[in-house]
Amino acid sequence: MKQEKTRVRFAPSPTGPLHIGGVRTALYNYLFTKQHQGDFVLRIEDTDSQRFVPGAEEYIINAFSWLGISFDEGPHQGGNFGPYRQSERRSIYRQYVEQLLNEKSAYIAFDTPEQLEAKRNEIPNFQYDASTRMSMTNSLTLSKEKVQEMIDAGKQYVVRIKIEPGQTVVVNDIIRGKVSVDSSILDDKVLYKSSDRLPTYHLANIVDDHLMEITHVIRGEEWLPSAPLHVILYKYLGWEETMPRFAHLPLLLKPEGNGKLSKRDGDRLGFPVFPLQWNDSKTGDISSGYRESGYLPEAVINFLALLGWNPGTEKEIFSIQELIDAFSLEKCSKSGAKFDYKKGEWFNHQYIQLKSDKEIAELFLPVLKENNIETSVDEKLMKIVGLVKERVNFVKELWEQSSFFFVAPTSYDEKTVKKRWKEDSSEKLNRLYAVLESLTDFSAENTETIVKLWMEQNEYHLGNIMNVFRLALVGEAKGPHIFDITEIIGKEETLKRLKKAISVLG
Ligand code: GLU
Image (tube, rainbow, N blue to C red):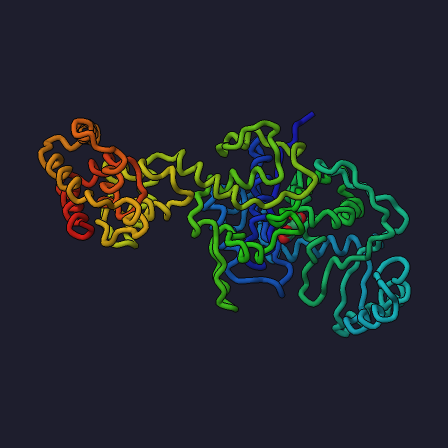
């Protein structure tokens, strides 16, 4: 038997910035299809013109390009199954609407919003279905002539699917197993609206998945309730044989685990829920993004990959290729995944350590510039990065950890002064000054050997002197190994800082 080629799609609606949950859905699609040497399609589901937001499609494309996830086909790059924007596929859908109407699997309904509202008030839990459709204004209750007359008169209508009640609809879900639903609970969903001559999500989605030869539909759990309707549509359209397989991914939950993750959680706890910053042109609101907050794309990918999928081992750090190799839908969880944003920070920390000092130094340059330090990626900068990077979760925090390499302290931390600066500190530092001044080799190793020897000979207490020495160099009680600092700032600067501390504090 010919092995079918795996084809999956990510099908966002351009209604605003892409939520991080959407990014995870796209990532799982990508990992799955790349493991099977398959294709990854981007399809823009823009049939709801009222919710269309300019810039949203571009945002989606930029977000994935930042993350390093590439599509094989899509609106921006084309492909053999285009167009990839549903608004450009209008003419394609019409024939399937006709087919469903001709086969009596769907019908035309003229009920106005007011009429529907009146029904809702009249019948508790009103649903447009087999139990109510014969009391509504539609092609099942009106004569053929009347229907035509109303259409000709320009009356707006919708096309609704005709659900047969009392049937068992089975959705075979790779993650959830067999999900059976009684068709009686389903309503006659709208498939097409004459007002904008466009199908609704349900019809367009099925037609496109079929025509684009999608083999697996991997999407968020919020679409599980729609899946039985989709299965029925595949049947009605005669495409049951080639129906894609479904996998509904677990929801991303609030960090506390109760309820769905929302933008408000991010605002409340201070983490982004969008991949890139989003500027809302209507409200002027700016929502923070992972990129702008200083996350490395690899860290975001690794973090998201483990939110809902468990490799079954202790391993946590995965390169994208390792993820592709290890991923499996069968190992995805059925229950929601708590959005542990602290773990996201942890991943960022890990990826900063994994990157070379040179790469991190490159990323550090703009931060330095903001602080008026003009430098380039040289030996010195790489050394500084190497000395402090284990202390940070984000590149921007490197400044806080290393500013004293670039600028001498202008003040001395009061608490540290109180605790460390003793009666004899001035005198000791003056002596240390003389020792350092005599050195010709100012390497960390040599300076450390000589200074330690000097302290031993004089029976000085190591801690006492080192603490005030650090205070003089850094301005507070922090920073890496002291002789690494002196080597980097050099002899002249070291002596200058010592002299200043003595004159200010002594
Ligand atoms: N357009 C839908 C969305 O915005 C796609 C759902 C699906 O993948 O079927 O999520």
